[in-house]
Image (cartoon, rainbow, N blue to C red):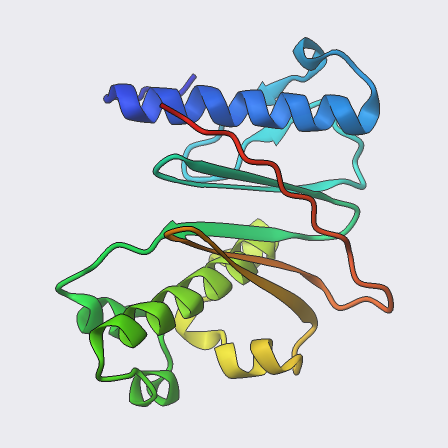
Length: 186
């Protein structure tokens, strides 16, 4: 296990591993303790005994954890939509100039817009191979093209209570199904 300093982070870590093992066991009909999960700093975990043609994505924010499993590249991001005082400065770090100009002046709409773009771009980033991630700043991903279907990715966006989530997968002739499960952490 990676060195985690807070109880909250350790709990998120343990519950995310429980979610991964439970989901994989349901899909592959193996016991939950049969999965070999290898942690990598600043990267998604690697599952050593997962079939080579399977892709995963993991995201967590506060009490919500999501895990995506696919036969094609997949990216998942979940963010708690917290009020931020420095929202415009943060937006300038990952939005294109066009996106920044569309940032609504009203605070609640501004936060919705901010988190939609942030999650969508993070999901695309997570779906990319590691070598492409290193050369793809979020500011080069155009949300308008992604949302309009003018990219190679299909975007699924969802509000889950106070959370924003985005899932991307390659644009296919048949769209993947999305299965959600809720686990309340205390």
